[in-house]
Amino acid sequence: MAAMDRRLLMERSVAGRRAVTVPEPDVPLTPLPDASLLRDDLLLPEVTEGEVVRYFTLLSQLNFSVDTQYYPLGSCTMKYNPKLNDEMASLPGFSEIHPLQADETVQGALRVIHELQEMLGEITGLPGVSVGPLAGAQGEFAGLLIARAFHEDRGEGAVRNVALIPDSAHGTNPASAAMAGLEVVTVPSDEHGNVSVDDLRNLANERTAVFMLTIPNTVGLFEPNILEITKIIHDTGGLVYADGANLNALLGLAKLGELGFDIAHSNLHKTFSTPHGGGGPGSGPVLVTEELAKYLPAPIVSENDGKFVLGSPDRTVGRLNGFQGSFGIVVRAYTYIRLMGLEGIKAVARNAIINANYVQSQLKDDFDVAYDRFCMHETVMSARRQKANGVSALDISKRLIDYGIHPPTMYFPLIVPEALMIEPTETESKETLDAFIAVMKKIAEEADASPELLHSAPHNAANTRLDEATAARKPVLRWEPEAAD
Amino acid sequence: MTPDDRKYSKEHEWALVTGIVATVGITQFATESLGDVVFVDLPEVGSSIEQFGKFGEVESVKAVSDLFSPVSGTITERNDAVIDDPEVVNKSPYEAGWLLKVELSAPSEIDDLMGAADYDKLTAEEG
Image 1 (cartoon, chains in turn yellow, blue):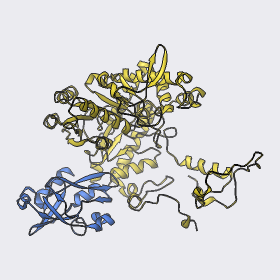
Image 2 (cartoon, rainbow over the protein chains, first blue to last red):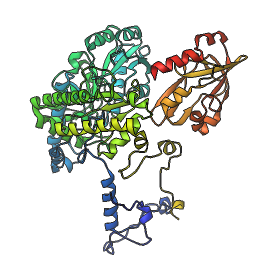
Image 3 (tube, rainbow over the protein chains, first blue to last red):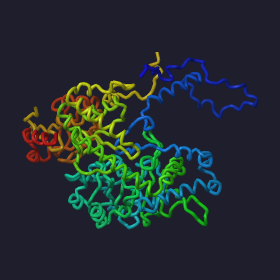
Image 4 (cartoon, rainbow over the protein chains, first blue to last red):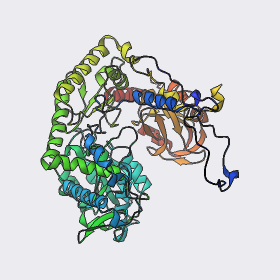
């Protein structure tokens, strides 16, 4: 890559330089309400329009994105996002409306929300849906508030205050449970990478408010004992929550409701193909059984005589944000599901599973597989073998950048040492997967022959190895005027 | 080398007992698995902790991990040097990187911990 200008916009600033020339006002001037409240110590960059454009375009070229390169980042489902999604979300009827407009003036937009509620209910077998939550973790939080409200209404609110969570769970699960006022008790995994059913049976009791389970789990494996698991929890009077982060593997093949789940969230930005990876926006609709629908967060859209109206369920846990969720993301997910159709979404799940198993089978001689069995949509491998030679999962991940491939998720789940979590997704061709496999094999050879090369990788990227420890210990979070001199 | 003057828990903490006070820290195996430690959260002096109970957190560039106490008792001293400079935990887990001093409420609990040889065996299996 050619050398590029790395100066921040503030460092390019020249006093008095302007992007536009504002004409003299031809209307009477109105003073600002209270000028004493205005800050005059806040420096703003003074640059031309061309300099602004050049700066942000160069920054965008430093980005790694699914539109440019292969991105097998486990648990994140970095599938290709069809451009038609964006085209639909840009239609004026969707993009030029205001969330406070009267319902009768935005019937088309409300109909999209309503139909997405119905489609997500059908896909998951959980018919009560609110698209309010703005991200997966917010969906979890909403779902846990629903579980608490359910137990409170049955007079058990004070006693049922424990969330059981597997040791392989996403960190958001215990965090959401704590936010919802629940005590977290960890359930160990068994030697096959599944929930230890015996431990679960011992831990589940009259204090169990909810058991949170990711399915397929974070090791990319289906829970063969799922029906027994949901029964154990139901027998104690608790509810079962599905973290839908990995829903991509179940699309059209299995319904959460039929597996015994009472509450779930779906990450639209993962499974239903909306742009993410740069911070969002996310969307994490919460889904529940018919019995729990009265607790859903507002707003939900219902249909009365062909009219769509925004409303609030009887015993709602409240609102999670000011308006109607991430509406632009709702339109994209809706478009995607309509594009795919039932057969299409089944093919999504099947191809995601086939691709992950293909990668796993091709790499198992070169890297340890955390649990050597058929996986679902992703495979968790381990750099244990390479670690013996001093090469870590981090080194391997950094070296992948040199080959133009985004690193897999590393060091997660926590139960797998030196974890490399690879999620190929269904949208990659066999040629891309073969190229990735060849690179991984090459890196495995390099790890044996020249570990130093990996310790200092990446070598060809815009930035070489970052000092993450110093960045975390002494973070520089903003540009400081003093530093400009 | 794992020092054999102290005892170890399977959660990778150590306890060095002198009279009725135990010095508590995390093992070298723990620091190597964690990677560079960037943040340490420890309880206040005067609070009590229970054997195998959670007493704090250690955050590395990879993950946040709970700290579990190898002993029960009352905290008499806290090593604020590791809070100010977490790197010390990586550099010297058995000496300068100690975390707490605990006045033991149940000294016989020490018998529930492992010696250095058994601990090395455990880490060799986990390795």
